[in-house]
Length: 303
Image 1 (cartoon, helix red, strand yellow):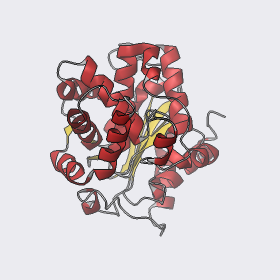
Image 2 (cartoon, rainbow, N blue to C red; image 1 turned 180 degrees about the vertical axis):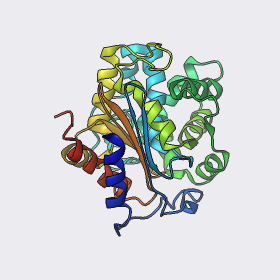
Image 3 (spheres, rainbow, N blue to C red; image 1 turned 90 degrees about the horizontal axis):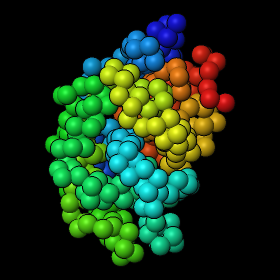
């Protein structure tokens, strides 16, 4: 069933001429082929279904913020919410205005300011944050070869002026405990993590499986923590288009400006799509349409 539906969606969406462009403000991302398109779905019984360029790695960008938050939540428990909130932003992912108005307290962990706060926590809590964060993501993925893309990292580091402004504003409100340089560096590395759509759907299966890794059985998050993480993805995973995604797709998920989107149906499956051209909100144009078709054709959403 899943394979047939994915193939239908791929054929329907691939030829569409939709407005959108790559995230050219990160020069390395502007080099990606706009015609690449992939969909992978992994069911909770461990079966994979794929179509398109599913063997090609791409930069996760903000999707990886979910993994950093998961590690911080696992370490700190509910104390993590002293550093970051759970409310939708309703503003662009790199907005300075809201941060200024709210005394430097990030609305949620999936906007840039919130992810910087999460990286600050990890710098405080881990002996070797860069290495340990990557090892954690590798564990979630079940793939030891998951890595940072150093070209993307260097590209982000060279052009990340808005993120520097965000963290310095937060620091001025005493919201950042460590030196800003190492926190920014970890953030840029986090965003550069790359995976294929198959690897990403496998990794997101954690959130469809009540916080338990399906391959090893290890409980990473409690059921309650998983529910709350999914709720944050539902309301905050698509920045100021989160309502639109909930309305059209009806799944918890997270997008990234690398053109990827990961989403999940609790107890059933996780799905990842990749198509580099983005809409004005920073979300993959074809990815959004593909996931809308998926829940329509399956007749399943969380609502």
